[in-house]
Length: 353
Image (cartoon, rainbow, N blue to C red; front, side, top):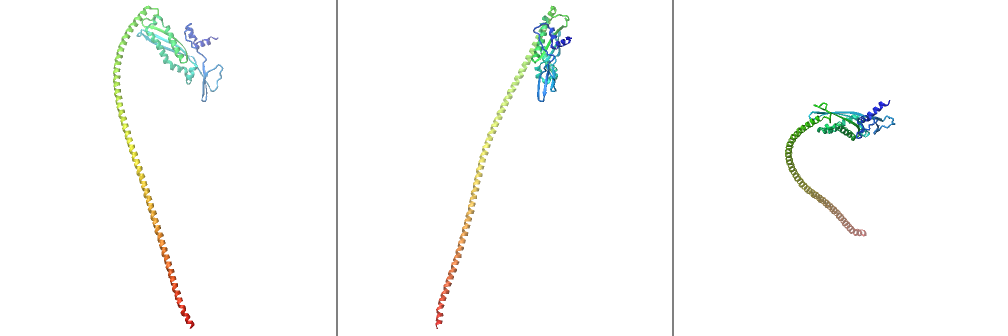
């Protein structure tokens, strides 16, 4: 009754693959969690991500994202020794995102496994290529491909582990040969000798090709050096021209600055002279105004003096006229009195008679 669940758990945790490899202590342990889920809490601006606990009640502000274990089949085929050997690589890879990876990529939670495959496909290709390059020397013909399979799986597991992705990779390499379809690696000495001879011929051919390629590259390097030397001379000439132009511009700037300085000094002197001239004109106007005012006051005082003299003279004339009139009146009175006095004795004599 528990067998289906046990088989499912074994598949999810990778223990079925671990059983296949036997009791190898160096084999990679994935540590998958079939029930791994993360909970996203979002309330307004507040947001938090955590692993789903065993006792969990979903609320309206919860969004649950599973982090499932996913299979990633990877297949490659390469040819060695100018098509004499064909290697088929089958990589059965299972992976699961950790909570730390989900936390760093929380915006990708709905498609996190697809994201992992898209992002790390190129890295897996590079890791596989690095290991397959070591098979070009043919040494694996005597020893087999088991060690290469382990190295490829180990490299993939370590690569994903560095990215906080749990994984379990099982690699299988199978070789087929164009002229020896039934050969068994490590057992057929005839094939080994043929392969070694083929490898030596290929190596000689490759060395010659490398030599020719090196000569071509040296010629290209020589041409590039000449081009670089020409370019360097052109750059030096351009720098000299730029330096001369810069010196010319500097001198022009200095001349212009000196001209501006002289012009400013002249303008300051003219301005000072203009101020002095305006001040002198202002003083002259002020003095002229003072003189005009003094003349007006003198004329006014002279007119007032003449008017006072005229008034005094008029008064003197009047007084003199009054004095003369009074003297005339006194003289007349005296004449009248004298006439009266003279007339009185004559009258007495007439009475007494």
